[in-house]
Length: 315
Image (cartoon, rainbow, N blue to C red; front, top):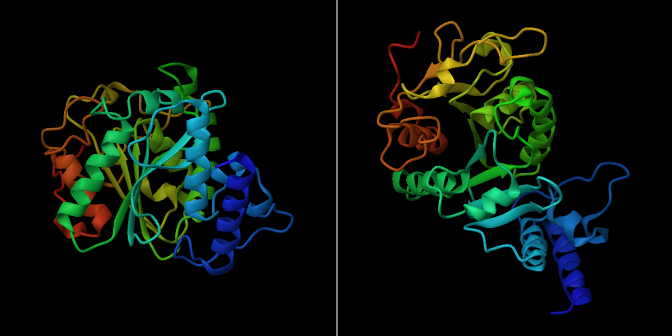
């Protein structure tokens, strides 16, 4: 298919989806005053436009990926940007029909290039974590339409440096995350699953989350930029977890002069519901199949809160 023909096809998808919700299966998004209509966008802009028809975004991003010579992803690309550190959003399952959607927000060290390179080789990477969570959700609730999104729509810190101790990248990421969440199908119930520095992003977004977000799960968090869970000012239920040997436990849980991210989220003083992690070890094994942490996250995302195993020794 030629470039101009592909552009016409994508424009047709965008117009049809916006007119009747035919692509997303959800209510048509309302464009803000002065916003560019998706049919008039370039392919790259359409592929990364929150609220644009899902199928049109998949088509645009697949074409961009092929043009760049990147490997085929495990899921479908809802966002794809290879400029600089890039952005990438990958979907496991049918996002348009899902009634329960979990959104994984990774932490430091991840970028679009690394996600694509380690897409199916790193069992502790965010893509395989999304696959494991999607599999577990389907296993636990086979009749429930579900989907899992790996959302790397921001630029995390690259490593243990000044950026990771500050919240500048988290604040910028929170705004992008909110835009993304508001563009998801409106009838789905959402769960945020935030790992490491991703929990700071979620903490920054918490007070402005759309009402569809019922639960916020912070795994291996260095803090959430607040003193207590109540300080998040969110209607979502806040859950936290940390493996016993996770090195993040050595983080100075303070916030002074813009450095640090506040109270330890698994402490009793923070006031969140602390989940058990079972056999999960280290900083990145929370989505390993068979771990209690993965099972608990799936229970929350499926809406089975009462089945979550909780820690009684949070301190």
